Length: 278
Image 1 (cartoon, helix red, strand yellow):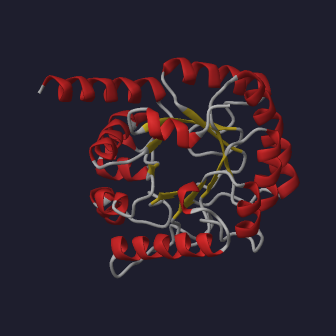
Image 2 (image 1 turned 135 degrees about the vertical axis):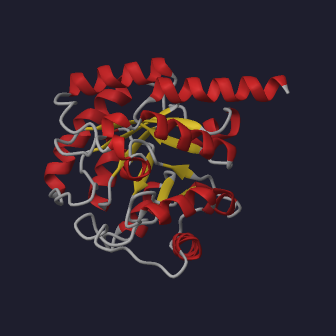
């Protein structure tokens, strides 16, 4: 199977990561993929539209979301991953905070662990990640899904997020995870106000300067609706999502995690065509 480091080394950045949520309660597409067949069909559409890799999640981490028990998360995630791995030769990312779920996901065909808690949610995560030896996305989040949007506050959000990620990188390396298997994500929308999110988007070049691939997940998020009051519904945030993706491209991101693959890939194609004509 094609691996993520190979794609990062050979494809134009940023790669387009298509989102596949096998959850009933995700903020934008919850409940749309009710069966394994739905997941496979959606994956085929995303790959045909230009996705380079797929991110599959079985527990919503939107603000206010309830925690899903480990067994239930595995029951949702593993059949989808097995079906996708059997059909498609692309990196499959498992979006989970739990080490037991990550272990089951890799056994089912996942080749990337995308952890919104940066391997802090349970005490076994560092050791399991070292054992699994797959690329790991370390994301910054303040609080839990239940508490993260309750008056988030920082002295300096950029400095604090960068400091957290540097600390987690160090913990991972000391825990036996090779630095070259790590990616970082500023966690847009995870325990941040509009102003915090804008500051982090503007600071993406500083994050890229850490020397690790940067993943940006801004697609359809609520900060877009706060900029445009007419976009309170996530379905009305395509334009803002594309603007954020293009900013990520310009700022050195390695991956953008998006719901709208075709539109994002088209925007990137136009951007690169113009750059090539200059």
